[in-house]
Length: 319
Image (cartoon, rainbow, N blue to C red; front, side, top):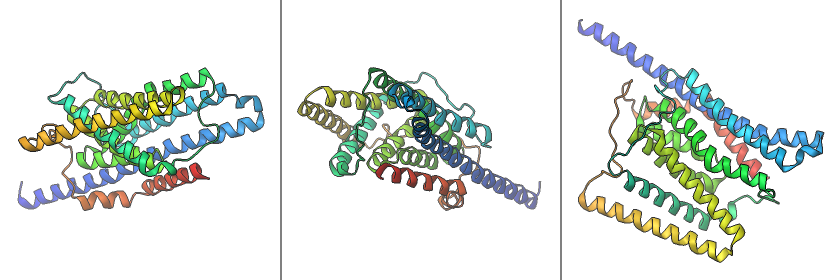
């Protein structure tokens, strides 16, 4: 094969790869839009049903509808991305038992930094949290379903979408790009500004854990621990004295932060990156420059639709 033929072949390969990149970015953000639309539709349908037949406003019915829509809002977008993405992952939800070196240090580091960020957000932005009159569930059924959703379903279904579909698809073009985008989509999907910050930081570590292990099992475990701790804190605040809750919450934050700082200092002294160093996986495409990746996102119509939907969600929280 002569040089000119090789150049033509490489040019065709690059143009085809860029086309796939733009297509898959649009698919990822379109699936995120589907997720938000279904979540918003849930509230609208509940309001409509209550107007048509007031008994449907009972908590057992509203919680059941929320559960159904929550499952659909994550399963359907995952299936959409898996079906339409051109360079989708071989397995959308790769689950395998993994115990890589220094995984405990990584889990402790990620938990410590995430909880410290959460603590800082609570201190700085507590007044920005939207207040809903009568917030919380008043029946045992509602509370039980809420715990099932937050502690059991959320870690599995959210990792299926955000790490399996979003990260798994974009990682074929650039692992770092996939980490950043999946974390931001995960954070922005929470819509409440203080939670966006905390969830984005958590999303970074979840994506890095997925990249480090090649298994979503570690992500589910990290996510489950975070949500379980959050639910435990809420129940403690509800059933116990607020001072007791504040003490245990602050103690946990300080302990996790100190341990994480010790890990960082130890890694810095030894000049080793074993805690957050990751194997560089082989890519199916050439590495794209940052400018190409940013331009592909900015030129995606579904990306701007996602931004509008997030903004609409923030507006609905505070009206």
